[in-house]
Length: 353
Ligand code: SF4
Ligand code: SF4
Image (cartoon, rainbow, N blue to C red; front, side, top):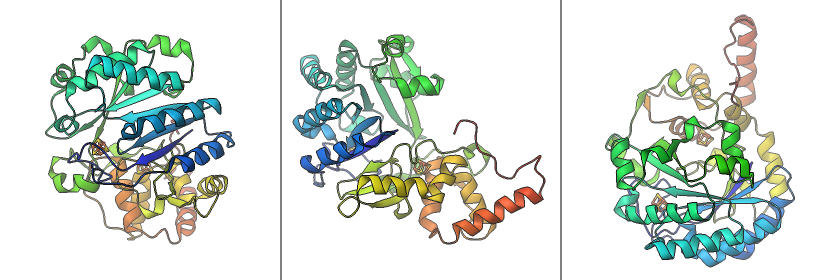
């Protein structure tokens, strides 16, 4: 699993879809000493294999981030950074910065690039940063937010100077290979050498994206969303206020996902609490759609009509419900499953979970 440090909410950009409301005037940031402490504690937890530096724009503090990556590497974990590539203003600068990052031990790099980021960061920057990543042996991933106003795929590739045969959709990569990518597993890295992986996801109407909700690509609420969440518990995140959330999804986290605060409780205890939480367990086994359906049947939430993604269903459901009597709800449903016949269970874990 990986632990994200949402290092800062400050960003050079103020994207219209930003779920965390990041901007140049947002000042919250994790203190570097505290970050070192979190990383040290994370290294003592066997299951944490990777530290992710995200934000906001973490490379606004690039010296601190290089120091933290080096510390992460020294403690035997790999590292990933999520950036918008604002710093890659020329090929030479991009090369210098990626060299510094990889010399510190960085193993994975993600670039956020789409119609919204483009309003603040020149597409050429992303192109420079990708070229530099390839030069230093990284397999870059582009995270692209898609709306009903987005460019078509070909136009997107042209804008970012990407040759179609160099691009692979993350959905086409076996799950095992994706999670080992960058784990100093050179066989897998070699296989994707010089490729660019693209991960598309629909815009989630949270944070500033609420104001452009009509841009959302929505589907009728139905089985298309019936999938377990692979992020909850597996990709928790620490925010600048010290809160640990059970996932680091791309929208303002909701209180139900808040595990606790690191000013008051140790990381180890919060991890234990996270693993014991039955709502998180349910989301990881059955997913938000099933949770919404259970609550809807009990008239504990209103029936959603349309949604952009499982994360929207999840965040709206958790926001609308106080988590009360979850145990009863589960017992009720497992009892129903038995009564309705074991051949056709009401709830069934997903094979991918
Ligand atoms: S979406 Fe990313 S690049 Fe844009 S304002 Fe938010 S953190 Fe910054
Ligand atoms: S489905 Fe819910 S728990 Fe999973 S990543 Fe999305 S918001 Fe987080």
